[in-house]
Length: 337
Image 1: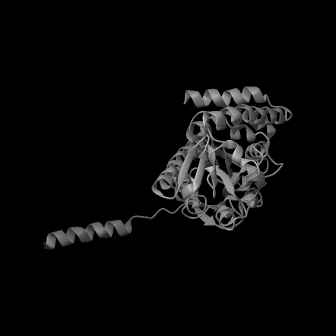
Image 2: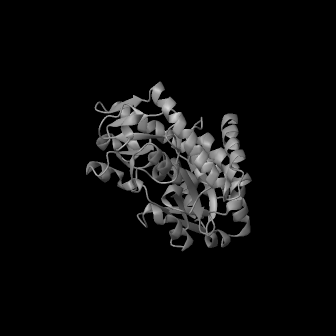
Image 3: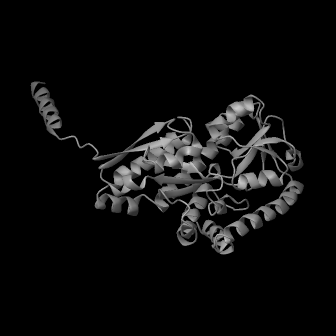
């Protein structure tokens, strides 16, 4: 027993003597979703882990909530008040056009496939627009197909006309207008109180919001359109000085192992997981209902979808990008993954 105690004491002494390596660089993350939302519970921790592994622990990051509302995140990072954030392009009215490409309805595939395709199309077509000027773009992703979540039960597409619906902007706004809804623009963290106060009849968001924003409590009905009404466009962004101030070897490690397609793929995969969680939460709620669009609804929506796609592609074309080719690349890349 004495030998065992001596052995344990020796091991403890060695452990104490070992140096503890602290990160040389700690980046500040600004995030705007609720603490338990998948963005904060999974996506950011995954990205931090990727950063730490790529840099052998020399770079890490810490998450801070509530620094600014969602629409202000890009300016926050540009000003250096935070080093990293994720932005939803639809909140930045008039600032982004090319990003609407991934938001279009009609794509077949999950969020991971769409996010990988998005980064590749950005690299080939959209970079020339320089729409993320002022920050370093380190990843792009999309959520799953957005559906209508409402207080009253909606069983057909034509019921949407005249409803007061929270719509995020971007293609979501185009679709809402085409469906005849009265659009109400509030950021995602405000949807619960907007619905609870009856300031809106419904919201158009992905299924993850059933759980992430507690829509199972205030929007107990889902009208589900195969392929969704739109997809949301997000970007991981970094302060340019924060990146440039890192040693060159760390910059290289991040560029090669984390930024771009790896970060985009990870974020899309996480969104697929949390969309599934939102559906599970809905199915587990006895007072929640999911109504699928009928064949007649889909025929009616096909016309609206075609008009929205044509409108958005014309906007992107006007910026000097071959929008049709970019659109076809998204579809082909998603089909190949």
